[in-house]
Image (tube, rainbow, N blue to C red; front, side, top):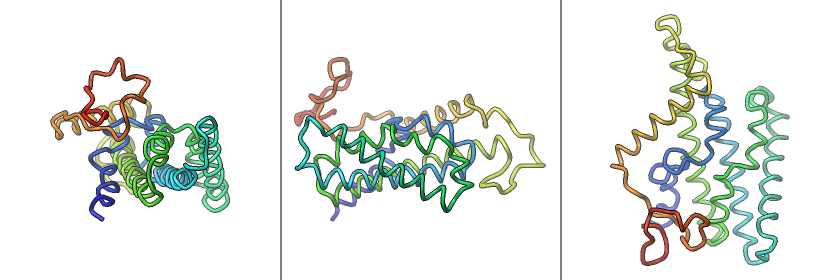
Length: 225
């Protein structure tokens, strides 16, 4: 039970996908101009990630290695399409706000990373907990960025006026440079709080295409130290 709890919570803080591993940066920068849009994107990504990881884990023994990646792509694309249809049918304002970035969950490296490095090698329950933890961590990171950018760029949080009318807004935070600046400051703060410690990976270094150029020495089990 303790091990499964650790699997769930490590993606929220210790191994946060956005602030620690810098996964899914494209939608984070594009959609986090408001807290509401960031929350919607985070929830959508979590749904696709969890459903894909559960399905990948349940079929891992039946999939030959030669067709594994194309099948994973088909799985993710199917769940993204379902989320699109549901959002468009029942939450049209959210669908319009997210726009093309909802479709781009299909190519989100966070989703494929968790499928390949964890779900394809672990049980269904563990894969579901890992995906939920990573999804919640990604959502929290998106919302934090959204709150900061919306507050400084528009003076509101979730559309509610906080600084609007009292402090002049800094419009650059609603643009791409403001997104990069916000993300960079948060990542720097996270690194400072964790003292820049390297975190171990949950996959074998021998399988990584960048292992030859990696500066992190592998531990005794073959993972990153």
